[in-house]
Image: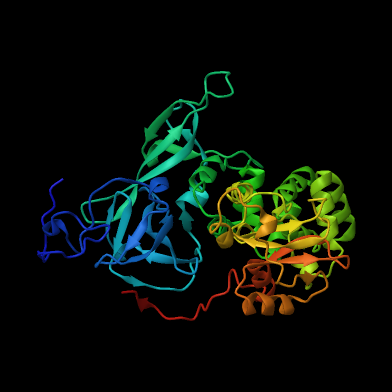
Length: 452
């Protein structure tokens, strides 16, 4: 495609090439949108840059409005800017949409995005919808939506990527796919039938847990529950851990008891205990009875302690080894990908047994210290026994002071018999000390500003 440049800015020798900058600077243009068809699901997660190449955020969704005769018109993008805030970027402030990147004029209104009446988000609300083909050949599900500008630069839905019902009895088979124009389909939804959330879940597969939580909470209530039901237990558990407690309880109440218990099994014990503590005693006991016995035992232990104490904030599953274990063994455990980074910063050395509550705590060995010794070195020879552990009754404020005073990311928690019962990390303390709405709080009264 040949693009007539509107201006030419030569690059000096050694000038920095921005991520979106074309090899030939003369090919760059302003105020004109590239005539490229873009699929919404592939656009999600793409970086948004200003005219000089500074990154502003990433695309989370595409917003359209319906029209009586023509295909829905694109009015803007939902963009996530630093601070995990989702804002609206008008399509009029988009100068280019290319493969893997969006270039804006740099002017962004930082007020949190909230959909207005008549606005529809493609990823959140359109993918997974079941439609009828007007030619009478059957039904299909929308798997993706293509948007494209016309000669006047107005973006609209140009095509739908559809999947028809499968024709094979194999559980691994998928139905054939086809493209259709917007006017070639009509929405089909039986009373009480939920739209499929499978395609939407697939588009969220690469999101960080905190980003997934934010994205879920921005969905309409019914759509949120549909997506939550489609997510795997461990993925939903990760997202719930990043949500405010009121939202956690609301979602858990809408899941069946069996599914709720499965999700609680996948949560970190301290997060599961915090969530269950918000429920009525009868439901709490019922869900604990449905959980795996080992997971339920950890949660019951945490529920015995006050929510503002080290015992109530700790995790009962730190890395525990004997004094005879080697540096190589400790490093192998730290490498586990599912381990929280704060808990991977150190291992705890105790007498047997080596599951909480353990034998007497001997000390801890920090990751950095292990790197200074050969792999065959015994942990007992390099253990740090100078740091005082915190009792289960210590307050969150006391723990925070110790973490700050000694520049630590985790501390051992002991009972009255000096047995290790868990570890408390800096993120556990922050979750408690920050305001209840810290995940969603922002200043909606901030004026629009130019991000340079």
